[in-house]
Amino acid sequence: MVIQRRQTGPQAEQRHEVRLIGGRWKRSKLPVLDRPGLRPTPDRVRETLFNWLGQSLEGVAVLDAFAGSGALGLEAASRGASPVVMIEQDPAAVRHLRACVQRLGAAQIDVLQADALAWMRAAAAQGRRFDLVFLDPPFAGDLFAPALLAAQALVGPAGWIYLEADRTFAPADLPAGWQPWRHLRAGQVHAHLLRHDGVPAAA
Image (cartoon, rainbow, N blue to C red; front, side, top):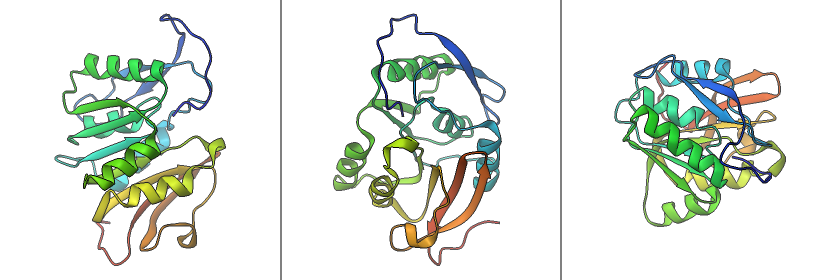
């Protein structure tokens, strides 16, 4: 998610790229907008995460909240996840994500402009459910706890939550019934894959 705003025209500078690691669009490079606060998940972290999840996500329903660059949702879609819903609040980032989706021909991805917390709460109230939710909120926004609470209402007992944060989250920091299954630190990034207590998970 982009948490700061500045005036930019349609020609907003694109200085970075996201490289998809696996699946249908493996090695595809997509530009990332040069926007304050935009922090794509590093390649190393994404590669490890999708090794944890498995190389194929065929038929897995995915929510990429705080989508930002779209690195997580696009990677999941490349590996067969469907449907994939990407939530982003910044209008320029939303336009850019939709252009990336169109370029890939990724019909299973729906990019929505919305506040991620409000959208998740409304979706849960409507009975919407996902198998996997990606949470990568802005580190400076202190949104980790409310994002986890909103996400857990969208995921069934056999589902997963991925949390990217600036610190380690222990079981006591998580909603009731959730436990960390895998954790990785890469520089300032702490990547957590979370699951329900007592639910067997593939090694």
